[in-house]
Amino acid sequence: MSTGIGLILRIGPGVPLTAPKAVIDALQSVEVTSKAVGTSGFKLVFRIDSGSLLQTLFLVAGGVSIPLVRIVVAVSVNGQIETLIDGVMTKQDVDTDSKSGDTTLTVTGEDLTRVMNYQEFSGLPFPAMPAEAQVALLLAKYALFGVVPKIIPSVMIDVPVATKQFRRQQGTDLEHIKDLAKSVGYVFYLEPGPPGTTFAYWGPRVKVGRPQHALAVDAGAATNVDDLTFTFNSDRAEMPIVMIQEPLSKLPIPIAVGSITPLSPPLGIVPPIPKKMPIIKAAAKWSPIRAALIAMATAARSAESVTVKGSLDVVRYGQVLKSRKLVGLRGAGLAFDGLYYVHSVTHTIKAGEYKQSFELTRNGLISTVPRIPA
Image (cartoon, rainbow, N blue to C red; front, top):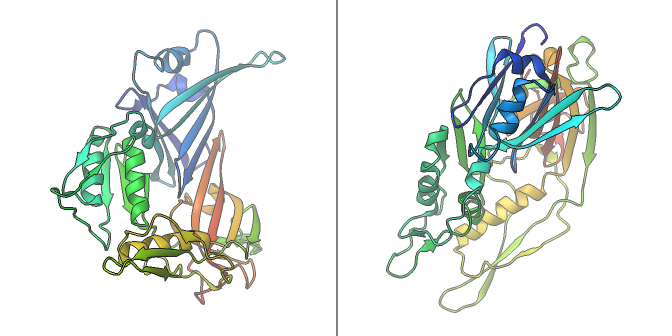
């Protein structure tokens, strides 16, 4: 690795331990993808031979005799350790090049949401339990893997009367948790924390907070990105409408809201005008608050009309760019300068090289802040 950058790899069944030197020496490349929406994953590529320790560690140990092999990938940048992913191995591929004679072992995997998706518990009752309590109960069984719940209560805590009705689980734990998040306009994802811990976040998508070190383009010696591509999709924006039913008169009441919330403020001054007004189905029995929350979440996702894709060298950037946080961009011109939400980041690590490709999003053109923090 380059000066100031080191790779930390831990492997093991259940409890990951520091990988042996033979494994680190055989490692050719590491790729980790972290997304704001969906499952994060990783890919490790090793060079092996017939007597390699990796044959036993991944192919044999990864078989049916051991339920799962856990892998933790972390990096040290200028003395600061960042855990990129804490997950489990899902697939192993062996490829032999007939010309060079080299054999490579590719290990792919996903974050710990994979474990939450193994077993179905359909029919499990949750009497008199709001969504927040259901999520906490389901996540409790994963404390063994170091999963720490971060649950943000919704503004509409609905506690059903157990003698009248109560909710039952549908599908796996992951499917049920995501369904509960969708029902109040929330998101659910796992975020690696300090070594041995993973935060399970269930709450609104937050687009506030201190921005990361700014990205700079066309800034001479201060430039810290390799390339950037900008896209403005003016047809993406929508204003969803939910139709709720007044309980006494049974009259339908349409509710249409914008994409701006206290936790999702506008990052662009000039947003696109919504050209579509889709009607969200199955909302007749929702309360007005729940309907507004889901409509706002749907509108916020469609409002992300500006997309920036690019790549950077971590040595030049000076730190690890993280997904699900804000970052500033300078030097791109009036239309595209400003703050962005980091939608996804892919880490690519090889000997002497650490690069990141990223995707940034926001709701419109021209920055809402006069100055981009460094």
